[in-house]
Length: 326
Ligand SMILES: NC(=O)c1ccc[n+]([C@@H]2O[C@H](COP(=O)([O-])OP(=O)(O)OC[C@H]3O[C@@H](n4cnc5c(N)ncnc54)[C@H](OP(=O)(O)O)[C@@H]3O)[C@@H](O)[C@H]2O)c1
Image (tube, rainbow, N blue to C red; front, side, top):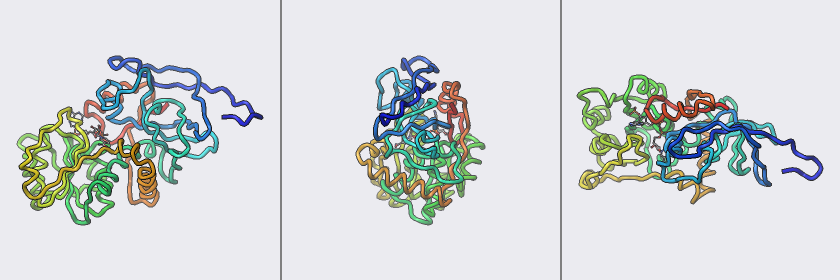
């Protein structure tokens, strides 16, 4: 936007573009985005790359955007108008040097939080704070088991649960991921791909009889074993299906022990209840600012390596979070 007295300088931007769901993204340079009243231009320093982005660019997510488009749903950078360090949830356009977002979706980054941490905070952490305080609860001293514990959602689940006073058993495929889970505060770990590991028995043993909450962003064959490991009144939180398989749950396993299955669709919540989501993100950023939450530093990829980054996410090679740096 310009005020009639000053003509804004034309900007150029570089961005990763998806032109077809079955082809690699291309890096393209062109005119920078227009800024309308009520919007802010952010010069991006880091863009969070998520498992969801890998699905979206293949047309395998529940939302199929119109082609061509630039993926990237969360960014951190500098607000062009104020010079302030900000993070923003933009949904699309984040894998670029610049993005324009509504003023209302921009949040100042607390001191001591890096651009990388800020760019990877919202999707994973908002999902887990929403899950564990709005969709269900986990009380101090209760046990939470988390699958895919070394991934983005998994590590956020551990951090949020510890901040709420819970005990955590982290379940993941590699020693590196289990180490990350321990650093995030996990009290016990299970290497669930090791030969001979019975996930249900291992969770029951680690928790002294059963978990109160299971957090599952993985699905597949592990889901039923984890559900069966819930104790009396246990809650099973359905977050996603990173394994590629949507589990079919026997209903008797929900009846037994008065269990509850809780579905979480944080993305839909943000659209249906924008003020509720703003309050959630304010609470989240406050918890980071006062040190109750400690997001990890992400693995960094140059924007040009977007294809390698998304493949690493999809093929289970990343521990923690990843960012693209333009
Ligand atoms: N419902 C919501 O509101 C919401 C919000 C955000 C994300 N999600 C979903 O949550 C899921 C996880 O997201 P994320 O950001 O945590 O992803 P991520 O960082 O890539 O972590 C996913 C984890 O899943 C495990 N996994 C098991 N089998 C896998 C396979 N075949 N391919 C890839 N990963 C596999 C891996 O852990 P191990 O190697 O240790 O098994 C991996 O670390 C995604 O499906 C995403 O769409 C849902």
